[in-house]
Length: 452
Image (tube, rainbow, N blue to C red; front, side, top):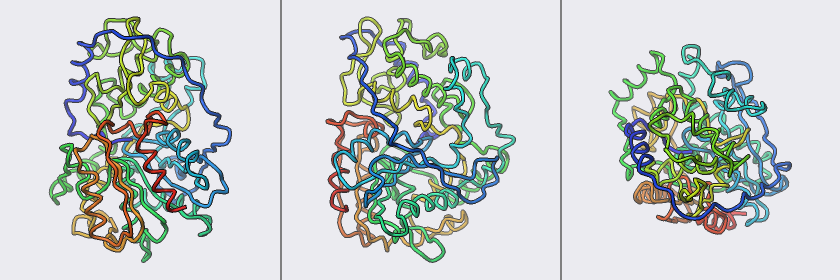
Protein backbone atom coordinates (compact mmCIF):
# COMPACT_ATOMS: atom_id res chain seq x y z
CA UNK A 1 0.00 0.00 0.00
CA UNK A 2 2.35 2.69 1.18
CA UNK A 3 5.72 3.25 2.78
CA UNK A 4 4.96 3.10 6.52
CA UNK A 5 8.45 3.94 7.71
CA UNK A 6 9.82 4.39 11.19
CA UNK A 7 10.56 8.02 10.38
CA UNK A 8 6.90 8.70 11.19
CA UNK A 9 7.36 8.26 14.92
CA UNK A 10 4.74 10.91 15.65
CA UNK A 11 2.03 9.15 13.69
CA UNK A 12 -0.09 8.03 16.63
CA UNK A 13 0.15 11.38 18.37
CA UNK A 14 -0.96 13.25 15.27
CA UNK A 15 -4.05 11.09 14.94
CA UNK A 16 -4.95 11.25 18.62
CA UNK A 17 -4.83 15.02 18.73
CA UNK A 18 -7.00 15.35 15.66
CA UNK A 19 -9.60 12.84 16.88
CA UNK A 20 -9.92 14.53 20.24
CA UNK A 21 -10.93 17.77 18.53
CA UNK A 22 -13.13 16.31 15.81
CA UNK A 23 -16.62 17.73 15.66
CA UNK A 24 -19.87 16.30 14.26
CA UNK A 25 -21.69 18.05 11.45
CA UNK A 26 -23.11 17.66 7.96
CA UNK A 27 -25.63 15.34 6.31
CA UNK A 28 -26.27 11.62 6.60
CA UNK A 29 -24.03 9.36 4.58
CA UNK A 30 -25.37 8.01 1.28
CA UNK A 31 -26.72 4.46 1.04
CA UNK A 32 -24.31 1.58 0.68
CA UNK A 33 -23.45 0.71 -2.91
CA UNK A 34 -23.74 -2.76 -4.37
CA UNK A 35 -20.48 -4.67 -4.77
CA UNK A 36 -19.57 -6.08 -8.16
CA UNK A 37 -19.47 -9.83 -8.50
CA UNK A 38 -16.10 -11.42 -7.87
CA UNK A 39 -17.03 -14.71 -9.55
CA UNK A 40 -14.85 -13.90 -12.56
CA UNK A 41 -11.95 -12.55 -10.49
CA UNK A 42 -9.90 -15.62 -9.52
CA UNK A 43 -7.17 -15.50 -6.90
CA UNK A 44 -4.54 -17.77 -8.38
CA UNK A 45 -1.57 -19.36 -6.61
CA UNK A 46 1.82 -19.79 -8.29
CA UNK A 47 4.53 -22.07 -6.83
CA UNK A 48 7.85 -20.29 -6.26
CA UNK A 49 11.28 -21.26 -4.98
CA UNK A 50 11.89 -22.48 -1.45
CA UNK A 51 12.21 -19.69 1.11
CA UNK A 52 12.61 -21.64 4.33
CA UNK A 53 9.20 -20.66 5.67
CA UNK A 54 6.37 -22.85 6.96
CA UNK A 55 4.41 -25.23 4.76
CA UNK A 56 2.34 -23.38 2.19
CA UNK A 57 4.50 -20.28 2.11
CA UNK A 58 6.43 -21.11 -1.07
CA UNK A 59 3.85 -19.57 -3.34
CA UNK A 60 2.61 -16.18 -4.45
CA UNK A 61 -0.85 -15.18 -5.64
CA UNK A 62 -2.36 -12.96 -8.28
CA UNK A 63 -5.86 -11.54 -8.21
CA UNK A 64 -6.88 -11.64 -11.88
CA UNK A 65 -9.42 -9.13 -13.15
CA UNK A 66 -10.68 -8.84 -16.69
CA UNK A 67 -10.77 -11.00 -19.80
CA UNK A 68 -8.38 -13.98 -19.46
CA UNK A 69 -8.02 -13.95 -23.25
CA UNK A 70 -6.76 -10.35 -23.28
CA UNK A 71 -3.60 -9.80 -25.25
CA UNK A 72 -2.06 -7.49 -22.64
CA UNK A 73 -1.66 -8.02 -18.89
CA UNK A 74 -0.94 -5.21 -16.44
CA UNK A 75 0.81 -6.76 -13.43
CA UNK A 76 0.57 -4.50 -10.37
CA UNK A 77 2.68 -4.74 -7.20
CA UNK A 78 1.40 -3.24 -3.93
CA UNK A 79 3.53 -1.08 -1.68
CA UNK A 80 4.76 -1.64 1.86
CA UNK A 81 2.21 -3.58 3.94
CA UNK A 82 -0.01 -3.57 0.84
CA UNK A 83 -1.70 -6.57 -0.73
CA UNK A 84 -3.58 -7.54 -3.86
CA UNK A 85 -6.94 -5.99 -2.98
CA UNK A 86 -5.29 -2.58 -3.16
CA UNK A 87 -5.93 -2.80 -6.89
CA UNK A 88 -9.30 -4.53 -7.28
CA UNK A 89 -11.34 -1.34 -7.75
CA UNK A 90 -8.71 0.35 -9.89
CA UNK A 91 -8.44 -2.81 -12.01
CA UNK A 92 -12.19 -3.03 -12.57
CA UNK A 93 -12.23 0.55 -13.76
CA UNK A 94 -9.22 0.02 -16.00
CA UNK A 95 -10.44 -3.12 -17.78
CA UNK A 96 -13.80 -1.42 -18.34
CA UNK A 97 -12.02 1.51 -19.97
CA UNK A 98 -9.45 -0.41 -22.04
CA UNK A 99 -10.63 -3.48 -23.99
CA UNK A 100 -7.98 -6.15 -24.47
CA UNK A 101 -6.36 -5.69 -21.05
CA UNK A 102 -6.38 -7.93 -17.99
CA UNK A 103 -4.98 -6.85 -14.60
CA UNK A 104 -3.09 -9.16 -12.24
CA UNK A 105 -2.63 -7.80 -8.70
CA UNK A 106 0.19 -9.54 -6.85
CA UNK A 107 0.33 -10.87 -3.31
CA UNK A 108 3.84 -11.59 -2.04
CA UNK A 109 4.71 -14.86 -0.30
CA UNK A 110 4.50 -13.11 3.09
CA UNK A 111 0.72 -12.98 2.68
CA UNK A 112 0.57 -16.74 3.23
CA UNK A 113 1.45 -16.15 6.89
CA UNK A 114 -1.73 -14.22 7.69
CA UNK A 115 -4.58 -16.01 9.48
CA UNK A 116 -7.81 -14.96 7.71
CA UNK A 117 -9.92 -17.74 9.26
CA UNK A 118 -11.68 -15.35 11.63
CA UNK A 119 -13.67 -13.82 8.80
CA UNK A 120 -15.45 -17.14 8.33
CA UNK A 121 -16.64 -17.09 11.96
CA UNK A 122 -19.72 -15.46 13.43
CA UNK A 123 -17.61 -12.99 15.41
CA UNK A 124 -14.43 -11.83 13.66
CA UNK A 125 -13.91 -9.12 16.30
CA UNK A 126 -13.59 -11.66 19.10
CA UNK A 127 -11.43 -13.97 17.01
CA UNK A 128 -8.84 -11.28 16.37
CA UNK A 129 -9.05 -8.80 19.22
CA UNK A 130 -9.34 -11.47 21.89
CA UNK A 131 -6.29 -13.28 20.58
CA UNK A 132 -7.75 -16.46 19.10
CA UNK A 133 -5.96 -16.11 15.75
CA UNK A 134 -2.58 -17.54 14.80
CA UNK A 135 0.15 -14.94 15.15
CA UNK A 136 3.53 -15.40 13.52
CA UNK A 137 6.13 -15.47 16.29
CA UNK A 138 9.16 -13.37 15.34
CA UNK A 139 11.34 -15.69 17.40
CA UNK A 140 10.29 -18.55 15.11
CA UNK A 141 10.61 -16.51 11.92
CA UNK A 142 14.34 -16.37 11.34
CA UNK A 143 13.73 -17.46 7.75
CA UNK A 144 12.38 -13.96 7.06
CA UNK A 145 15.86 -12.53 7.57
CA UNK A 146 16.52 -13.65 3.98
CA UNK A 147 13.21 -12.52 2.48
CA UNK A 148 14.62 -9.51 0.68
CA UNK A 149 14.46 -8.01 -2.77
CA UNK A 150 16.26 -10.82 -4.66
CA UNK A 151 13.63 -13.31 -3.53
CA UNK A 152 10.79 -10.86 -4.11
CA UNK A 153 11.90 -10.25 -7.68
CA UNK A 154 12.44 -13.94 -8.34
CA UNK A 155 8.89 -14.56 -7.14
CA UNK A 156 7.57 -11.65 -9.19
CA UNK A 157 9.24 -13.00 -12.31
CA UNK A 158 7.24 -16.20 -11.90
CA UNK A 159 4.08 -14.10 -12.12
CA UNK A 160 5.36 -12.02 -15.05
CA UNK A 161 6.30 -15.14 -17.01
CA UNK A 162 2.91 -16.71 -16.31
CA UNK A 163 1.17 -13.53 -17.43
CA UNK A 164 3.15 -13.46 -20.67
CA UNK A 165 1.97 -16.97 -21.56
CA UNK A 166 5.29 -17.90 -23.20
CA UNK A 167 5.52 -14.53 -24.92
CA UNK A 168 2.07 -14.64 -26.46
CA UNK A 169 0.86 -11.72 -24.34
CA UNK A 170 2.38 -8.34 -23.58
CA UNK A 171 3.14 -7.57 -19.94
CA UNK A 172 3.15 -4.08 -18.45
CA UNK A 173 4.60 -4.02 -14.94
CA UNK A 174 3.59 -1.41 -12.42
CA UNK A 175 2.99 -0.72 -8.78
CA UNK A 176 2.02 1.74 -6.11
CA UNK A 177 4.53 3.36 -3.73
CA UNK A 178 7.21 0.77 -2.89
CA UNK A 179 5.45 -1.44 -5.42
CA UNK A 180 6.46 1.15 -8.02
CA UNK A 181 10.01 0.90 -6.71
CA UNK A 182 9.84 -2.88 -7.08
CA UNK A 183 8.60 -2.60 -10.66
CA UNK A 184 11.34 -0.14 -11.66
CA UNK A 185 14.06 -2.30 -10.10
CA UNK A 186 12.66 -5.37 -11.87
CA UNK A 187 13.21 -3.59 -15.18
CA UNK A 188 16.86 -2.91 -14.29
CA UNK A 189 17.53 -6.30 -12.68
CA UNK A 190 19.91 -8.87 -14.11
CA UNK A 191 18.16 -12.26 -14.26
CA UNK A 192 21.13 -14.50 -15.06
CA UNK A 193 22.26 -12.28 -17.88
CA UNK A 194 18.82 -11.22 -19.11
CA UNK A 195 17.67 -7.67 -18.27
CA UNK A 196 14.28 -7.57 -16.61
CA UNK A 197 12.97 -4.94 -19.02
CA UNK A 198 13.09 -7.50 -21.83
CA UNK A 199 10.12 -9.21 -20.18
CA UNK A 200 8.06 -6.03 -20.35
CA UNK A 201 6.12 -3.84 -22.75
CA UNK A 202 5.92 -0.91 -20.34
CA UNK A 203 6.37 0.41 -16.80
CA UNK A 204 3.68 2.12 -14.71
CA UNK A 205 4.75 3.87 -11.50
CA UNK A 206 2.00 5.18 -9.21
CA UNK A 207 3.24 7.60 -6.54
CA UNK A 208 6.59 5.92 -6.03
CA UNK A 209 9.74 4.75 -7.73
CA UNK A 210 13.49 5.21 -7.45
CA UNK A 211 16.08 8.00 -7.64
CA UNK A 212 14.56 10.02 -4.82
CA UNK A 213 10.89 9.46 -5.60
CA UNK A 214 9.95 9.76 -1.90
CA UNK A 215 12.35 12.54 -0.94
CA UNK A 216 9.69 15.25 -1.03
CA UNK A 217 7.98 13.61 1.91
CA UNK A 218 11.11 13.87 4.04
CA UNK A 219 11.90 10.20 3.53
CA UNK A 220 15.28 10.20 1.79
CA UNK A 221 16.87 6.88 2.80
CA UNK A 222 20.22 6.71 4.57
CA UNK A 223 22.03 4.13 2.46
CA UNK A 224 25.50 4.55 3.88
CA UNK A 225 27.42 1.32 4.35
CA UNK A 226 27.40 1.88 8.12
CA UNK A 227 23.64 2.41 8.31
CA UNK A 228 22.97 -0.65 6.19
CA UNK A 229 25.28 -2.70 8.43
CA UNK A 230 23.41 -1.53 11.53
CA UNK A 231 20.08 -2.52 10.05
CA UNK A 232 21.37 -5.92 8.99
CA UNK A 233 22.80 -6.48 12.48
CA UNK A 234 19.37 -5.77 13.97
CA UNK A 235 17.80 -8.31 11.63
CA UNK A 236 20.44 -10.88 12.54
CA UNK A 237 19.60 -10.19 16.17
CA UNK A 238 15.98 -11.20 15.61
CA UNK A 239 14.24 -8.01 14.43
CA UNK A 240 12.99 -9.72 11.27
CA UNK A 241 9.67 -7.85 11.03
CA UNK A 242 9.31 -4.21 10.01
CA UNK A 243 7.36 -2.77 12.93
CA UNK A 244 6.55 0.64 11.46
CA UNK A 245 2.78 0.22 11.61
CA UNK A 246 2.85 -0.07 15.39
CA UNK A 247 3.09 3.75 15.35
CA UNK A 248 -0.63 3.91 14.50
CA UNK A 249 -1.35 3.10 18.15
CA UNK A 250 -3.83 0.20 17.99
CA UNK A 251 -1.46 -2.58 19.01
CA UNK A 252 2.15 -3.59 19.37
CA UNK A 253 2.40 -6.68 17.18
CA UNK A 254 3.47 -6.61 13.55
CA UNK A 255 -0.08 -7.42 12.44
CA UNK A 256 -2.08 -5.36 14.97
CA UNK A 257 -2.81 -2.35 12.79
CA UNK A 258 -3.60 -4.47 9.74
CA UNK A 259 -6.16 -6.46 11.76
CA UNK A 260 -7.81 -3.31 13.07
CA UNK A 261 -8.07 -1.74 9.64
CA UNK A 262 -9.44 -4.88 8.04
CA UNK A 263 -12.00 -5.30 10.82
CA UNK A 264 -13.03 -1.69 10.36
CA UNK A 265 -13.54 -2.31 6.65
CA UNK A 266 -15.37 -5.58 7.33
CA UNK A 267 -18.00 -4.03 9.60
CA UNK A 268 -18.32 -0.87 7.50
CA UNK A 269 -19.02 -3.02 4.46
CA UNK A 270 -21.37 -5.40 6.28
CA UNK A 271 -23.40 -2.82 8.21
CA UNK A 272 -22.27 0.73 7.41
CA UNK A 273 -24.99 2.56 9.35
CA UNK A 274 -25.04 0.29 12.39
CA UNK A 275 -23.46 1.42 15.65
CA UNK A 276 -19.73 0.73 15.52
CA UNK A 277 -18.79 -2.55 17.15
CA UNK A 278 -15.13 -1.52 17.21
CA UNK A 279 -15.40 1.88 18.87
CA UNK A 280 -15.55 0.50 22.46
CA UNK A 281 -12.35 -1.45 21.79
CA UNK A 282 -10.34 1.50 20.46
CA UNK A 283 -7.45 2.67 22.63
CA UNK A 284 -8.35 5.70 24.73
CA UNK A 285 -6.12 7.99 22.68
CA UNK A 286 -8.07 7.25 19.51
CA UNK A 287 -11.64 6.83 20.82
CA UNK A 288 -13.98 9.79 20.20
CA UNK A 289 -16.62 10.63 22.79
CA UNK A 290 -19.50 10.65 20.30
CA UNK A 291 -21.00 7.35 19.19
CA UNK A 292 -20.09 6.48 15.60
CA UNK A 293 -21.43 4.09 12.99
CA UNK A 294 -19.27 1.38 11.45
CA UNK A 295 -18.75 3.55 8.37
CA UNK A 296 -17.74 6.56 10.46
CA UNK A 297 -15.29 4.46 12.48
CA UNK A 298 -13.58 3.44 9.24
CA UNK A 299 -13.56 7.08 8.17
CA UNK A 300 -11.94 8.00 11.47
CA UNK A 301 -9.06 5.63 10.67
CA UNK A 302 -8.51 6.56 7.04
CA UNK A 303 -9.61 10.12 6.30
CA UNK A 304 -7.02 12.87 6.10
CA UNK A 305 -9.19 15.32 8.06
CA UNK A 306 -8.32 13.53 11.32
CA UNK A 307 -4.63 14.30 11.07
CA UNK A 308 -3.26 11.10 9.55
CA UNK A 309 -0.21 11.68 7.37
CA UNK A 310 -0.73 12.02 3.64
CA UNK A 311 0.70 8.61 2.82
CA UNK A 312 -1.83 6.62 4.87
CA UNK A 313 -4.98 8.63 4.20
CA UNK A 314 -7.64 9.45 1.64
CA UNK A 315 -10.04 12.32 0.94
CA UNK A 316 -13.37 10.80 1.89
CA UNK A 317 -15.62 12.94 4.08
CA UNK A 318 -16.62 13.65 7.66
CA UNK A 319 -18.94 12.71 10.50
CA UNK A 320 -22.61 13.64 10.23
CA UNK A 321 -24.65 15.06 13.09
CA UNK A 322 -25.84 11.56 13.97
CA UNK A 323 -22.36 10.04 14.02
CA UNK A 324 -22.72 8.46 10.58
CA UNK A 325 -20.43 9.26 7.64
CA UNK A 326 -20.93 11.85 4.92
CA UNK A 327 -18.98 11.47 1.67
CA UNK A 328 -17.65 14.85 0.58
CA UNK A 329 -14.36 13.87 -1.07
CA UNK A 330 -13.16 11.91 -4.09
CA UNK A 331 -13.02 8.56 -2.28
CA UNK A 332 -16.36 7.25 -0.97
CA UNK A 333 -16.02 5.37 2.30
CA UNK A 334 -18.00 2.49 0.78
CA UNK A 335 -15.20 1.87 -1.71
CA UNK A 336 -12.62 1.86 1.07
CA UNK A 337 -14.79 -0.57 3.00
CA UNK A 338 -15.21 -2.86 0.00
CA UNK A 339 -11.45 -3.07 -0.45
CA UNK A 340 -10.45 -3.28 3.21
CA UNK A 341 -13.03 -5.93 4.10
CA UNK A 342 -11.53 -8.68 1.99
CA UNK A 343 -11.55 -11.22 3.46
CA UNK A 344 -9.07 -12.72 1.01
CA UNK A 345 -7.35 -11.09 -0.64
CA UNK A 346 -7.30 -7.87 1.31
CA UNK A 347 -5.30 -4.67 1.16
CA UNK A 348 -3.08 -5.56 4.11
CA UNK A 349 0.06 -7.67 4.41
CA UNK A 350 0.53 -8.66 8.05
CA UNK A 351 4.24 -9.39 8.12
CA UNK A 352 6.67 -7.20 6.21
CA UNK A 353 10.29 -8.40 6.23
CA UNK A 354 12.72 -5.86 7.65
CA UNK A 355 15.24 -7.11 5.10
CA UNK A 356 12.97 -6.12 2.24
CA UNK A 357 12.82 -2.60 3.68
CA UNK A 358 16.61 -2.43 3.75
CA UNK A 359 16.87 -3.63 0.16
CA UNK A 360 14.21 -1.31 -1.23
CA UNK A 361 15.81 1.67 0.48
CA UNK A 362 19.18 0.68 -0.96
CA UNK A 363 17.69 0.20 -4.42
CA UNK A 364 16.74 3.87 -4.55
CA UNK A 365 20.16 4.68 -6.08
CA UNK A 366 19.08 2.59 -9.09
CA UNK A 367 22.66 1.65 -9.90
CA UNK A 368 25.23 -1.05 -9.30
CA UNK A 369 27.24 0.13 -6.26
CA UNK A 370 29.31 -1.39 -3.51
CA UNK A 371 26.33 -1.23 -1.14
CA UNK A 372 23.82 -2.74 -3.55
CA UNK A 373 26.24 -5.51 -4.49
CA UNK A 374 26.84 -6.27 -0.81
CA UNK A 375 23.09 -6.86 -0.47
CA UNK A 376 22.91 -9.09 -3.52
CA UNK A 377 21.01 -6.52 -5.57
CA UNK A 378 21.55 -6.97 -9.30
CA UNK A 379 20.65 -3.49 -10.54
CA UNK A 380 22.80 -3.71 -13.65
CA UNK A 381 20.58 -2.59 -16.54
CA UNK A 382 19.09 0.74 -15.50
CA UNK A 383 20.51 2.65 -18.44
CA UNK A 384 19.28 0.05 -20.92
CA UNK A 385 15.58 0.25 -20.06
CA UNK A 386 13.83 0.69 -23.39
CA UNK A 387 10.10 0.45 -22.65
CA UNK A 388 7.52 3.22 -22.32
CA UNK A 389 7.19 4.77 -18.86
CA UNK A 390 4.15 6.09 -17.00
CA UNK A 391 4.43 7.95 -13.70
CA UNK A 392 1.63 9.44 -11.64
CA UNK A 393 2.06 11.50 -8.50
CA UNK A 394 -0.26 12.79 -5.79
CA UNK A 395 0.43 15.51 -3.25
CA UNK A 396 2.26 13.05 -0.98
CA UNK A 397 5.85 13.71 -2.02
CA UNK A 398 5.74 17.31 -3.20
CA UNK A 399 6.57 16.53 -6.82
CA UNK A 400 9.56 14.24 -6.37
CA UNK A 401 7.80 11.11 -7.73
CA UNK A 402 7.58 12.58 -11.24
CA UNK A 403 10.97 14.31 -10.98
CA UNK A 404 12.49 10.94 -10.17
CA UNK A 405 10.73 9.28 -13.10
CA UNK A 406 12.08 11.99 -15.38
CA UNK A 407 15.59 11.18 -14.15
CA UNK A 408 15.02 7.50 -14.88
CA UNK A 409 13.82 8.26 -18.40
CA UNK A 410 16.64 10.68 -19.23
CA UNK A 411 19.30 8.20 -18.12
CA UNK A 412 17.86 5.28 -20.08
CA UNK A 413 16.43 4.44 -23.50
CA UNK A 414 12.77 4.92 -22.63
CA UNK A 415 11.02 5.67 -25.97
CA UNK A 416 8.13 7.73 -24.64
CA UNK A 417 6.72 8.83 -21.31
CA UNK A 418 3.53 9.97 -19.64
CA UNK A 419 3.93 12.00 -16.44
CA UNK A 420 0.79 13.01 -14.60
CA UNK A 421 0.08 14.91 -11.36
CA UNK A 422 -3.02 15.38 -9.24
CA UNK A 423 -2.30 17.33 -6.07
CA UNK A 424 -5.91 17.01 -4.89
CA UNK A 425 -5.14 13.38 -4.10
CA UNK A 426 -3.47 11.85 -1.06
CA UNK A 427 -1.25 8.81 -1.43
CA UNK A 428 -4.03 6.21 -1.17
CA UNK A 429 -6.69 7.99 -3.21
CA UNK A 430 -5.52 6.50 -6.55
CA UNK A 431 -6.38 3.05 -5.21
CA UNK A 432 -9.93 3.70 -4.04
CA UNK A 433 -11.25 6.97 -5.49
CA UNK A 434 -14.60 7.05 -7.28
CA UNK A 435 -14.34 6.03 -10.92
CA UNK A 436 -15.33 9.42 -12.33
CA UNK A 437 -12.89 11.26 -10.06
CA UNK A 438 -9.88 8.98 -10.26
CA UNK A 439 -7.40 10.80 -12.47
CA UNK A 440 -4.80 8.11 -11.77
CA UNK A 441 -6.92 5.40 -13.37
CA UNK A 442 -7.96 7.69 -16.20
CA UNK A 443 -4.41 8.66 -17.13
CA UNK A 444 -3.13 5.11 -16.67
CA UNK A 445 -5.86 3.90 -19.03
CA UNK A 446 -4.72 6.37 -21.67
CA UNK A 447 -1.13 5.12 -21.32
CA UNK A 448 -2.07 1.44 -21.41
CA UNK A 449 -4.31 1.98 -24.43
CA UNK A 450 -1.22 3.03 -26.42
CA UNK A 451 0.47 -0.29 -25.67
CA UNK A 452 -2.37 -2.72 -26.35
